[in-house]
Image 1: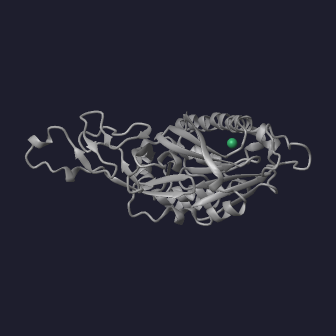
Image 2: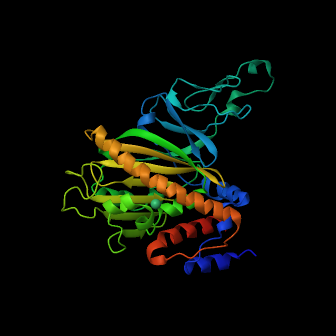
Image 3: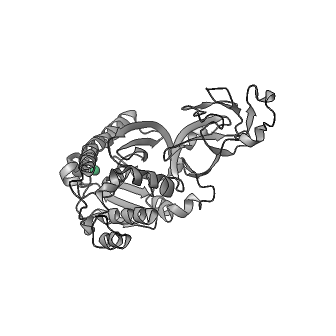
Length: 364
Ligand SMILES: [Fe+2]
């Protein structure tokens, strides 16, 4: 029997989770596309990928393909990356071009999204190219990162970030010093919400992440959890800063001894590891109720050695593999219907409660 909205809200107050069926139900997934992904900011690409006029890069706003492009006036434009003719994806990957040409019938759009040419359209009566511009999406940036939003009337990204940029700056994390290094991409056989929730607590760290827990002090009195309206933060520190390298598999010399894991509704996180200046934009693109692409854009300051970068990425990848096994296990169980709901330990998992309240509110 399904729980009423009042039951769900009261349950969340008491630490009872949302129904696990919501992780596997295609109807919930479809509702999320409309109620969440059609109106929230989604991380797109590093700003560096679209710095020059003509540079474009594809991304997603939920399921919807999007292309971000810099025009000759220096404006950053975002468009639904679907040809107005027969719905083919217009741009592929990333690159630099004077126009965006659909690979199907060569309909050609300007960097401003206007339809410049459609072969044989001059033979049609009543065909006006002005009627078939690429659909726009909203664009915003935070430091070296571009975000898109399908809702052109959405409040600016800054409203969602709240105090987060100030908190990041106060921690000495200087986005201006960072350059994009590489992107990793993995498909995970789990619902996007299971991945977010796994991100939002470190209660599982001692059991599931021995390497991570050796480096970072995950004791609940040492590992800080805070949440704003649309974001939440986890800040930890290196376990033994005074003794040697603190268990880090790379040099911590002169670097930060803090770890930062910040989440922004609904699918974006930034991760800063102890050590040389680094930041990873780690974000999630839903594929279907049971599958999610997880992507990681890593940024480092100039001068960080390739050896340290390789070691830091290996460290992050190990944590990611450990998490993947856990969330895929949750997904199999959620799909089975074998358990209706779970029980959060709110001292350690209140950021999940915060997230589930946002989900419940969005879908109500
Ligand atoms: Fe984890």
